Image 1 (cartoon, rainbow, N blue to C red):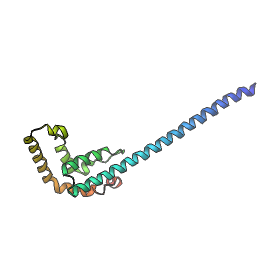
Image 2: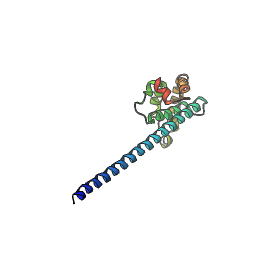
Image 3: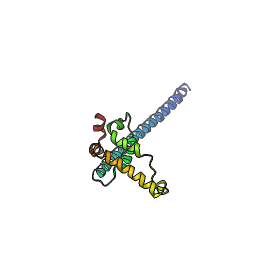
Image 4: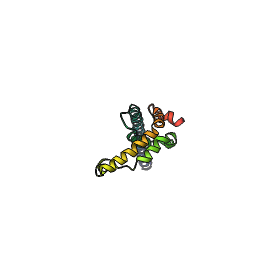
Length: 152
């Protein structure tokens, strides 16, 4: 009888220890999968940044559209201690700040042709004014590498 009183708690403890160990293993596996997915997302965003920068340089994408896309990609990077991209790419961020409120899609279509033309002229003037400086920043973003950017 005494042996049974010792054996039952030991079996319960062993079972709980096994269960706790399996939960820890699953947790570690989930963390590894999450880290892999995060790293893949970072790599995809970096590649998108490079592609858009090259398209801007080759004039396949206008500077305004490219600055909007690059701003959102840089800000979407899922990293801790994110560098201040606004300081690293001040002209690109400046253009974004000046055009972010312009209407797009249906809101743009709802405006009069005169208003659309006025906005387009304003945007084109900004692009022309900042083009040289943006192209310098684009030359860095063409080879965007998070490790290289973080060190600069």
